[in-house]
Image 1 (cartoon, rainbow, N blue to C red):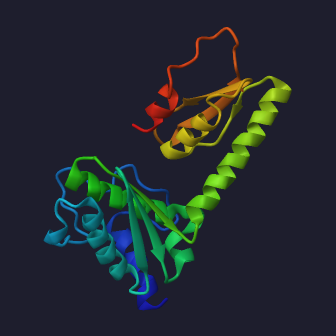
Image 2 (image 1 turned 30 degrees about the horizontal axis):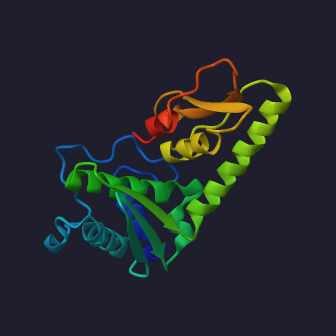
Length: 210
């Protein structure tokens, strides 16, 4: 393994993250400083610039061939990683990408008090995942309509659960809810009870965003 490829393993090892592991429940504790990169003070107060400085320093440590594009959409910051070995950056089942995204969100929460959310992507991985989840949910809806029985989807991220809730919020024959805690939290698609009172507008989806 060359030096550039070893950088990612070293970084994740320093943070207690194995390349084959899911993102840990806690990477940074509140009282601990962010030790990966010292941000450029010029980025203070500007979330987009602060994130760019942090990510550039992190990516340089992983592989100088990586570059990035950061776009801000209100409180959402989208980071596209470019160049380098993107397959390795994504990792098995996207675990390395998700771990780095977790680190970036922990950094932004420490700097800006949780006002901003970071979504990290590379080589269109997130878009492909989103399409896969949508197809899986649509297949589950068909199964519920035919069988009349609830269908549980596998555990997924809060943003992915929220996407499913919004997809079927107005569906005439099925509804969605979430069960479980932590990494086991998942969406259940079930027949809509015509006599049940509907949730207030956006309640289920809003709960997933918290």
